[in-house]
Amino acid sequence: MSLPLVSLHPPSHGDVDLAADAPSPRPDWILLDFSAYVDSCRNATTASCKARDGVHDVHVTFFPAQPPRVSHFCVDCPGLGPRCFGEEPKILATDGKFVLLRIFIGPRYGIVRHDLHEYYIYCADCGPDGAPSLQLLPNPSPCIFHDDQVGLISRGTSYTIAGLRDDSSPLSGDLSDLGTYVVYLFNSEDKIWRPIPVSVPCKEECSDDDEEFLHETSKDCTVDASEIFPAPLELLKELPGKGGKPCETLETFHTGHPTLSLDDDDIVYFMAKVKQQEKKAWILAVDMNHRMLLQISEFGAERTFGLSYTYTQSRISKYLNMTPR
Image (cartoon, rainbow, N blue to C red):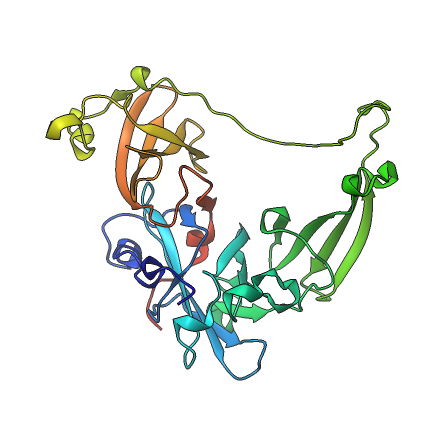
């Protein structure tokens, strides 16, 4: 079995939150887990298409939930079973009603073969009568880019994918290629991967003695847990305290993974753990302007390494039609 057992058991929450008769309104955005669960569950968001072998179908289903709950999605391939996946299918990027996914069907040792990866575009309403759709994209090989070097831009009813390849070769001893990149663009209209060379001048940034040319982008968010005041105090009781006592402060927690709300600039969502490698985590909604804890939701972090990048914001829920067809 290539996949951990937890990847075969999706959370119980999901589309119940957003059913037509649900008391809470459909959110314009969600926190969406990057890694799929492999399960044959279905709902009105399910879309499918043929895999690259032209025989088996790939099904993708979303289960949106109200933040601070983390929404998830499921992928399965009827007739092959979960053993066909060398790793969990993954969301690479999402924008508007589109989601870009990478799915690897094959033995785990083959994941290093970029030409064997399959890329799909999920659209919330591009199918007949506004139904969701799933489309297999041409494999970008020999274009090579990493999962975190891909972007997706929605253009209404169409989209553009951009993948970045670094052609620098500092290990070769030849520094002439430093700052040289190739951007591969894929437009939904012509469905062709087009290479565009890009050069980042480094003469002013690198001296003759420099052996490295590095661009690094990051975003930091510093929070003093002692300055965050709980809304009702009962919220903290949902978190484990020392010696079985109710939790009274967030200072004892490892907190990170800041994620901005897409509808309120003052609200930031954090992942909190008692220990870095805990299998259970909590998502905290914090009003940064008033330094107040607003909501807490439990999150199964069995597939999360520490406080690593695990989920992202997405507006896909705004376009999903949860009404059964």
